[in-house]
Image (cartoon, rainbow, N blue to C red):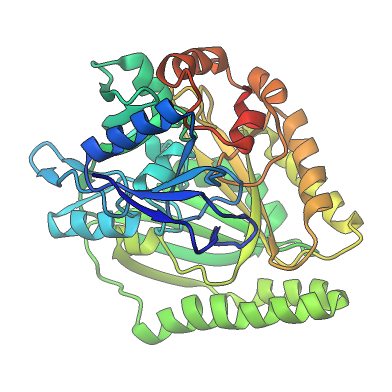
Length: 438
């Protein structure tokens, strides 16, 4: 029998900008219990939303009826080291997955900068890292198992239910409950990280060569300045330049979290200081080089709370988008306290992936919690949409189904799969109704 409990504690996401209370919390321990809960919800006319670790900024996980949590779901772990495949419960976090892979001498080919998400949440929203030759994390999925809106347990891969596979790897949780995922891995590898400050114009001029020369490249632009912090990660054969514990604590904990949090609080209290704080931040992050286990280089602690919007654009649009963004920031009636993150991905063939059919550049805009952000995000979204941008499904956006459909060539195909797998809309909420339509 699926575990249930009355909702006595309101749910909120990591940023605290989405809050809700479900009528019932479902905690299935196995796939059969997931299917049982879905069939019962369908028969009663109820709705279910699966909530992971709450690292989406939208209302995508908010349940206005039943909330399902997958932390207790145990489908077993199967590691095929020879074929470099791992099959795990979809409710496992990326952090736990990375530790599991490391114990078997394996690693994911790429990661974003946060590892707190569940695997189901990360792939359902198109979570990505950076690297001109790498797609989003969903491109590493070799197979998946989901429970559809009718309670059917469906196994999907490129060979088995291929249309569902093309849709379900980035599905917004609209097709069913992901219960198990098989991921394609690589032999464990070491990364050499190089972080350095640089002028924005220089980085933009050299960008094609930077993307070509490095496995992974990203940069952060500091508002009110012409400065950026560039980070490149490249695979190397030996872990010969470890970051000292003191330097790691100083940079990643003290400066990037403790000091930055204090600077944000100061900027929120005295907004006129924000440009100066940004300028100091741009100069405070000095150059450093180090090596480390891949996931420990990709992922860094994020303890300063913020809200975020991110758009994937055709790479050629970066210059125009950044020019517009600089004008937007300068014209706002309030100040921006967070840098803008710029990353790159390769094209893929997943229907609702932001990178479907094109190499992309991602621009992520942030604002410190408690600061106004709506006019900033709305103005940036207007520019991004005009440039062919696609919103990250886990980040704030104001798009609806009518405006999104032209941006995704396989939009109607996805909706057809949704109609087939969830005809009664067991897996919906107001956010999905606006985003995907009824």
